Length: 418
Length: 165
Ligand SMILES: Cc1ncc(COP(=O)(O)O)c(C=O)c1O
Image 1 (tube, each protein chain N blue to C red):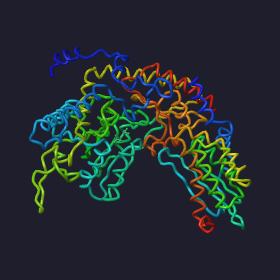
Image 2 (cartoon, helix red, strand yellow):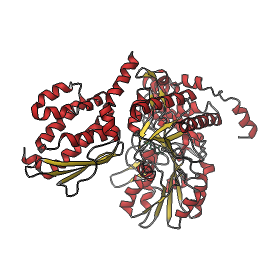
Image 3 (cartoon, rainbow over the protein chains, first blue to last red):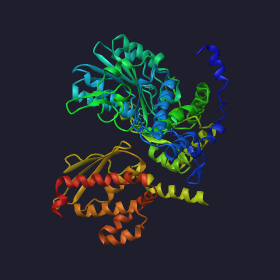
Image 4 (cartoon, rainbow over the protein chains, first blue to last red):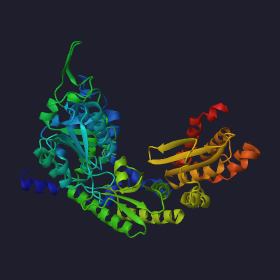
């Protein structure tokens, strides 16, 4: 797109007004324990705009059949919507081709797919590099692979602030490195990783790179060609889409060379009892009836996000992060876990003398939903010497007033517990 | 009014006695030369507790300690447990565990449970009645139960429970 065209389309963006955004999300007007819902757990799963809910309902009520199978209007209609959703995802991440966009049931399945197929070709002694802040879903598949193939799993240590300096990743790389698998943004701490630098450094030693973009896709504009990553995985449900749908982006040349993940319908071009031939991409990796309506729902979620200038959403979320951090720091005996310079939309903390679960229980009674626990990142918790933290995370619809509700509720919790 | 009621739930969960045991747990630690030991974990939240027991000649719980990390509810429950089951047989400890289970899960009045348990165990359960606050918080029931389940697997490990039938 020319600069001019870009400018022109920018003017088409909907103004970012958080109250109008909130009115797009039906659940936000409900109460919990007789208090207005204050939903601060979008990093675990985001709420859904009406546009997504309506599409899902419409598909089931009006246009539902299996895809790629029926030579009849209903099936053809839904098939074209399913494929249109793939195209929406392609544009959203700027992949070269639709063949590079594989629908999975979530990020976890996407990462397991890479481990089970791309990873299966590794030899004993080959190295996979991850970091100290990964989600279990970007740790355990590599441990399984290690136990099956004898690869070496290397963990890049994080700093006390919860950062992953590029130099630390570089120090872990060698000619034995086959794959670097890192989060784009830490779900537990909010740290934004220097993924562009990591990709170049990894490529320089001949390694490939998988990015766990579960949080990254929500808070950053992702351009997989510019990043030059080999794989990028994310889930739909954190991106205001339905659950049961995720995406694995992979470079076409690499996906082409990989064995299928699961066998079944859709993923073959010809089957005899002697042998089968694999279908073309992306069908080769989409065995069985896919999550059809969730994929269409994800397309609707992306269309919704595309109504806004991503920079405006990012600025709003950054304001919440800054305000929330200030307000929490102003409370006595709060310790922030993860104070990276470059952070997105999540604040993890502990309160002296109060266990995170007790806090979350009391906050809940004020209508405040936060996550308390290890955030599926136990090794990370260990490195901070805690078993759990409270995490408040922000999405497109949160407000400063909600941060105030959190702070007040924390005050009340402290009165009760401490 | 409704708001008050909700707050009441919280206050009956975090009663003084729970907070006190949560902050200054009794019988914390590991018994050297224990007869049995068991570790309990809550994989969802990362909480864990280790229970060690020393038995006397009559196979009664002569001493028990717990070591763990967790929320106020699980630590308080563990601490109160160490006081409540000392001197009991494995069978009696199991009855106590079942009573605590009921206390935490159902809206049964603690008085009812105390009565049912009789003269020996009744008063011991009475001391645990503060744990019943958890019954209004389904997500937290497992916190209160963790130390008790760990004690059970600890005693089962010795075979004591099965010999006593
Ligand atoms: C960074 C990160 N990676 C992976 C996952 C796993 O995603 P899912 O459970 O949707 O497969 C999550 C979600 O919790 C996450 O935040």
